[in-house]
Structure formats: structure tokens, C-alpha cells
Image (cartoon, rainbow, N blue to C red):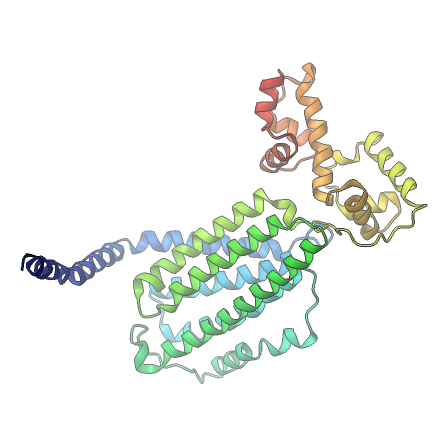
Length: 387
């Protein structure tokens, strides 16, 4: 009997939980409505940075950056435009009919652009049909929009089930999810192949899995298209966070996005054995006599040109006979030079930043990361312990 009374009382308390959750949700929503201008400013900042960063990647010189950077830039640029449409309409009260179709068109472009980026990361040329057939849905919707035959009515956005807009939007998101799944499966297969060749893929794995997780959360939030709190407020704000996470990773791991990052693993040598001693001698001369590594603009192509060999041959030599990819090999020589400066009494007056720039590094963050990777300590710790 006592047990039954406890169950009844507990059940009576449980019936208040749904109402309590609803009140909390309404309270949060009401509070967020009052800070629309603040959310709009924060979201706009992230979108603007995304557009600038995407444009920067698209404009990177081919001699220094990986080709995949251009496709990453295109993807970020398109994604920023997509959230710009949402932000402009909801926070700045733009008419729905003028923007909705364009957002759907961009939804259909995001999947193909992401997969094209993943293919480029692993230097896999897509089939000719890829660039054309996969964009047909977006082109069809774009033509319909330009002709004024909108696939939706200009009804309010928050009446999705009334005019079919919700269903169309969900289909475009499903289209994007299918491409994400394909990109992820391709990524896993390529990782296995690189690992079998003896290539370290940890950094690429961290980058791609992190990017996929962030995009998955973004799509999940956008799928709640009739919930203003998730779709209109959470997604643009979360995208702003994504932009800054990508920027931070890009700065901290700049070598990952530079040309010549992928080593050749244990593949059969493309160099004749009688050429190797000459390459080793010429390279050593450039390092010791000319300190070529101190040039902050040095790239694989430029160094290969000085040696009179192809960039591919030089990359293969460094990977096979030095045991590093080009970026790590170059940073190692720069760090060794920086250590000599830090230990020299004549240079004790130099700040860490000055040592970094004198050693051939363009940024202090890259120098700190490379130094700790090689020495196991930060430059400040190294100087303090050996001072």
C-alpha cells in the first residue's frame, strides 16, 4: 500500500515536467527575442569572416597551396552565403519570396562542393560527369527561380506545412547529407590506403572528422526548419563558431594546407640510385652555404628549381631519404637554427618573435608549434632552461 502511494505521488510530480520544460523553452525563446540585434551582429560577423576566408582560399597561389584549398574555399564561401540569406531575412526582415529559392539552390550546391573538396584532399580526379551531373538539381531550381516560377509560395516562413516549403527544404538537406556520407566513406577508404603506405594521417584525420561532426550538428539544427530557436538563431551562431574553429585550426596547422604535405610513403623510388648522392650533396650545400631554409617564401617548387630537379623528385627524396614531408623537413632546419640563436649569448636581447622571423617563420604561432614538435618544449622554456 505504501509503495502504491509513493508511485501515485511520483506520477503526480511527473505530470508537471512537460509543462515545466515548455515554460523553460518559452522563457529562453522570449529572452533571445529581446537580444535579436546582438545575435544578428554576432552571426553577421561570422558570416563576413567566412566569406573573406573562403575568398582568401580561392585566391591562394597554386605554387604554394594545395589545390584542395580552393575547393575548401568554395565550400566555405557557399555555406556563408547560405547563412547570410537566413540572417538577412530573419534579423533584417527581408521579404521571404526574394530569398527562399536562393537558399534552396545553395543547399543543393553544398554537397557536391564538399565531396569535390574531399576528392581534392587525396588528389583523386573526379569523373568528368561529376562537375556537371551533380549540379543539375541546383541548376534546375536556379532556372525556375530566375524565370519567376518559384517552387514555393511567398507565405510566411513559419507556416511550412501549409505550402510545402518545409518538405522541399528537408529534401535539399537530405541531398546534402547523402554527399556527406559519401565523402566520409571515401575519406575512410583513402585513410586506410595512406596508412598502408606508411604515411602519418593523424592530422588529416583530426581535421576531416572534426569538420564532419561540426557540419552534422549544423544540418541537424537546420532540419528543425519550423523552430525559430534552432534554425534561425542557433544555426547562424553555431556557424560563426565553426568559422573561428576552422580559422584556428588553419593557422595552427598551416603545413597541412601547404603544397607538398603528403609524403610518398614506402612507394618504389622514382630516382635513379646514381642521382641520389648528387641531390644529397647539392641540397646540403644549399642548406649550409646559402641557408636557403631562412627564406620565408621558400616552397617545394622553388627549392626544386634551385636543385634542377622536378618538385615530385625532390618531394620523393625528402620523404624517402630524410624521413619527413617537405613542411616538417623545412621546419626542422629552421628550428635547429632558432635553437642556435636562443643559445648564443649575442642574441639574448632578441625576443622570441624576432628569433622566429629570423629563422624563416612567417608567424609566431607556427614557430611555437614547430619548435615544440621538434624540441619537446616551447621556445621560452628552452631559453629559460639553457640560459
